[in-house]
Amino acid sequence: MTAIRITDVTLRDGMHAVRHQFTLEDARDIAKALDTTGVDIVEASHGDGLGGSSIQYGFAKEDEEAYLRAVCESAPNTKVAALLLPGIGTVDDMKRAIDCGIRVIRIATHSTEADISEEHMQEARKLGLEVVGFLMLSHMTPTSVLVEEAKKMASYGAHCVYIVDSAGAMLMDEVTQKVSALRDALPPDVEVGFHAHNNLGVSVANSIAAVRAGAVRIDASLAGLGAGAGNTPLEVLVAACAKLGIDTGVDLYRAMDAAQDVVRPRMSRPVIPDRDSLTLGYAGVYSSFLLHAERAAERFGVDARDILVELGKRRVVGGQEDMIVDVAVQLAQNRVRQTKEVEST
Image 1: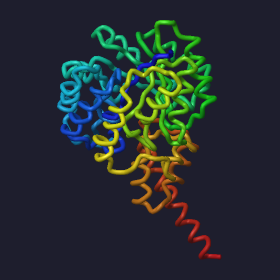
Image 2: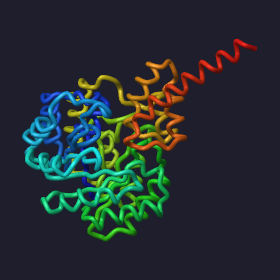
Image 3: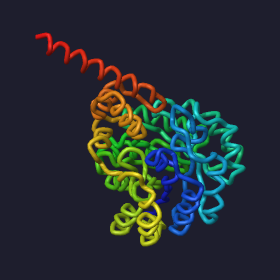
Image 4: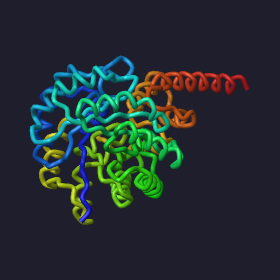
């Protein structure tokens, strides 16, 4: 029987879906529920990682250290991870997170910028952390380039390297190709992971394709809570894996109960492939851009889908959230210009 390790991202990626407004009570209740399910790792931080609470990415409701401590104290049987994006989070942020109780660090870069993770990964290894590399927006990068970036992360000390479908833009064939290539290229002691978003409605299918191609770490979240149309729903993934003979180590009923009774009542909106989140996957845009694009659309009186499609054409990446307003303003100006042209004819 194939065995995989599940990392739950409800308390990190799920923060995007609630505008980073989980309270300490929310964090404790969700962490306690996850601690009973058998997931291997629980990830917790601002949606954009350590140090992400800011005017650009959105202010979190709670202090970062208090949030991490609440999760670590409430999940004593589960390893807790934090996400770190070099350029947002720092080595000092990582050290403070260790003091709060984290045991795993997941260091994320754009899929062609693995080199900026070297310092953080090497320091994390010295500090005794389990180190995971995250190659974000992997759909934008050819497989051969992705392999070379993954090799860099492995050389820096990553125990595992993830292909991250940040836009929910991949389909099963691409997942299979890219995961297989990484598995063939990396040393046997470096695991391969996969992180999906459900913008095209195929996160579970993509995750299973990844497992069949050699990934042994898969990300999921309770009720699929996450950016865009959400992440791979933990309870659905566990059920599908059980039917396929894939051992997740997760108790299905407890995952179902945690999703239904603990997370769904805290969801401010359904995380589904609606017209805007579907557009993310179609256009290949970073899933965390969704709420920012919807706010800009309302502010400037344009269609959020037009904003997202234009961002996709410009191949924007994480950290370029300021482009959302620029595109919205340009679309609004174009509309005014077109209206005047029509009126003058």
